[in-house]
Amino acid sequence: MCILAFWLFAFCRALIISNLVFSCSCSSFSMATYEIYPRLAHYRELKELYAQGYNAVCPQCGQGFGHSTHREWAREYSWVPYIGADGRPIDAAVCGKCNHAHSCNYHLPPRLYYSKYADASGVREQVRRIVVPLPNEQQIAHYYGSMASIYAQSQENAPDYLFTFLCRLFDAEAVSAAYRALHITASRDGSTVYWQKDEQGRLHAGKVIRYSLATGKRDKGAGGVGWVGSSSAFARVSRPRGVCQCLFGLHQLNGLSDAARLFLTEGEKAALYGKILRPDAVWLATGGMQNFKEDMLEPLANRRVCVLPDADALDEWCRKATLLNGRGYHLDVPSQWILRMISPPHAGTNHDLEDMWKDFNFLRL
Image (tube, rainbow, N blue to C red):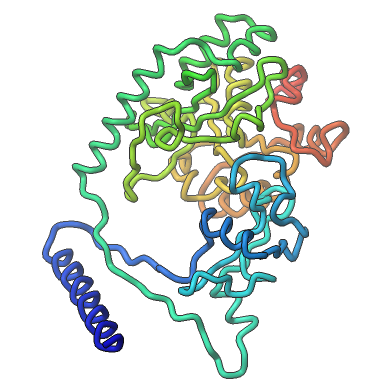
C-alpha cells in the first residue's frame, strides 16, 4: 500500500511539473532554469542544524556560530554550508561560504568541491532543475510603483539619527541638500534609508540602517542592515526576480554630461560625506565590497570615475579596476588616496571617507 501511494505521488508530481513547463512554453514569459539542490543553507535550517549539535566552523578563519555579536542572522551564523536534497550539509568541513566578506571571504561551491574531493567512483550530487517563468512587465511595473509610493511616504518622516549627528559636524543646509540630492530619507524609528534609483528614475531597493545618535556609527544592536520590503518599518513588497540592485546614487547620471566629475565609494554613508564636502560632484556607492563588479558598474562604462575604496578593500578594488579598464572602463584609484589608506592610522582597518573627511580637501582629488 505504501509503495503504491509513493508511485502515485511521484506520478502526480511529474505531471504537475510537465504541465507547468508546457504552460510556460506557450506563454510570452521569459524562461529561466533554477538549481534546487545543492544550495546554501537557510537560516532556519541552520538553527535546526545547530540545535542538533552541528558546530562546524570556517576552515579558513575558524569562525562559526556565535563568533559575532551582530544580531543579523548572516553574521550570527558565520559559516554557512551547502546542503543536499536531504537537508544535510554536503561536507560541513569545507563545502560552504563564510559570511565574513572583509576578513575571510572563503567560498567553496559544490561544483568546485566535487571536482576537488570527489571519490574514485565519481559520485556527484544530483542537481534537480525546474523551469519557471520570469515575471512579466506588468509585475515589474507594479513593483516599481509600490516602491515609489513607499518612497513618497518616507519623505514625510522626521529626520533620522544620522542627520541629527551630521548637523553637529556640518552646516544643516549642506546636510539637507546632500540628503535631497542622494534621495536619502528616514524610517519611523529614526533609521536612515538609502534608496537605489536608476537613471530612469525607477526605485530598485531601499537599504535601512540604524545609526547611533551619539557617535554616528552603525547601531549593530538595533538589528543591523534591513531592506524596504523586509523591514518592519515599511510595508512589505515582494521584489520580482527580474529586478536587481543598482548603484546608490545612479539617478544622478540622468542627463549628466560625460565630463562631470564622478566619485565611487563602497558605503552609502561615505558617499553622503563626499556629497557634503564636494556638492558639485556626483557621488555613488556600491553598497558593499563584493558589488564592485561589472554587472553593477556597467552604467559607468563610458565615464571617468574616481574610485575611493575602503582601506581593507584597496588591493581587491585596484585589481578589479585594472581588469575592468582593460575592457574599456575608466576607473582611476588616485595614488594620493592609496598612500593615505596604507598609512597610519588607516592601514589595517576598514576606514573610508567618513574616517578622514577632515583631510579630504587636502588630497585635491
